[in-house]
Length: 98
Image (cartoon, rainbow, N blue to C red; front, side, top):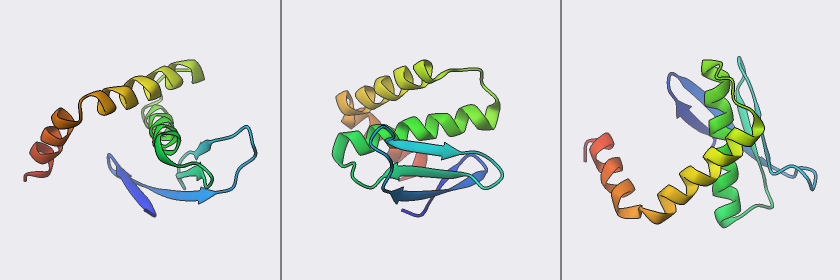
């Protein structure tokens, strides 16, 4: 995956080796970039990606949320998707017109 579409924007996505305390990062407009640590796999990678997407949304709409709020949303959204896969698949079918 090289880019993701978020609203009207295309955001570049890269996997890079980051320092041991950083799982991912988001760099804002105009050249938006999400970086996820290349060592992350599975659930840690997915949650980090969700975290950075939330950071991008906050930046796009100038929403006054801090890192603690982002972390809560990351874990809650991730758990919701994990706990409700059939519902999420159904929504995806509806949204994609399948």
